[in-house]
Length: 462
Image (cartoon, rainbow, N blue to C red; front, side, top):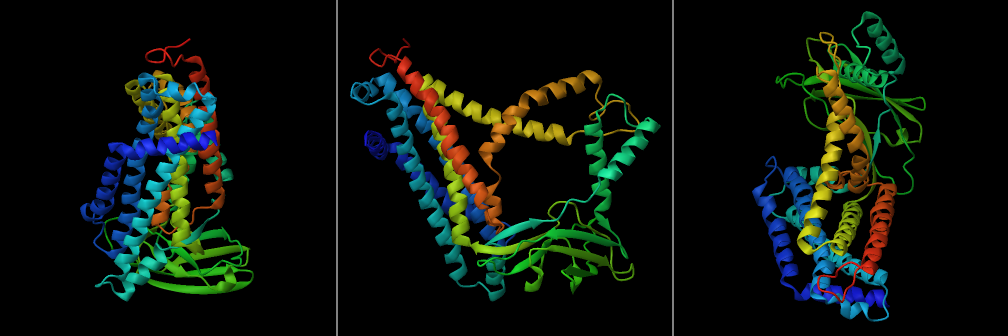
């Protein structure tokens, strides 16, 4: 009850302040203004993706900044003004004070996030119900956005033996310098093999193998989504035949206008039986077709209907709320340690540093290559530069891991793409971001509050 009382006081103080009103106004401006400022590709489908991806993404960013800075001031300002002393002299532990503040601020974030999510949901259906929307446009939005589809990726190509063989041959030829580790050289060789395998010329074939689950009681339709790329700016369509095999069954689909973009091929219900699904694409002859690229990754994937848009939106907003809960915990602990300006600077700097560390590790991992004409490593740099890069990567990697666990995947782009957010990812966000991180910050924050003399000006340390 003590914690809930402190949470209620926190909500009341926030409602009375003009900061909350300013945040609400900003959120309404974002929701109403972004769809007009960013028009997408001019289609209804593009407008829907802008509304869900960019609008909700900017809403999450604003709420994240507000949560961090408000949490910093929730404790730091009360310590400086000695308002927290009125609560601390009562039979309430410092841990209860921290948790009560955190619950109140998280509850406010949940209310604001639910308001924005409800407005976005209403705008989506208002656009669909508005005039000037054709049946084809409505069907495209319903099939590609207003769904929650489970994504099944293809098996990775078996390249281990080919990579090992080529690495040994390059070592013998002296192409790979002796100071380049086998792990880095093998990763670069694998990237080159995958790039060379992406092209499917006229008369050639490409194969994918999917481990499909059973549809289950909630499973709906299933489609094969393909995203070919054009090797040049020539947008001449390619043509070919898709052959699907599963459990002794075979099904063929003919595509005569395969151009760069996204294509959905409906899969027969009998092929979703929990077994292996083999998909072969045979390009037509040079007289009727051209080369088409299928990069390894998301160029071909199976999508199975699992839930509706509303349930998927709730999952995405819940993951965003877990991020806000972690940012609120960080801000509260920073406010326990420092004054308001220092706490806001330290919290913002820590978040930016974590995100930059993640970007640095990703860039460093993608920057390795083997140059046959130069016996250095990593982009032709000298040995000192290589060692500096490796040292920086080793330092940044733990921070990048923390940032990766905080981001928990890009939920809003998947929501705008109609991809189901798995339950395990939602549970992981709740445990890591909603419980573990706040628990750690609560332990630090309550310890700091016990070490500060709240009766002295500025809450000097004892």
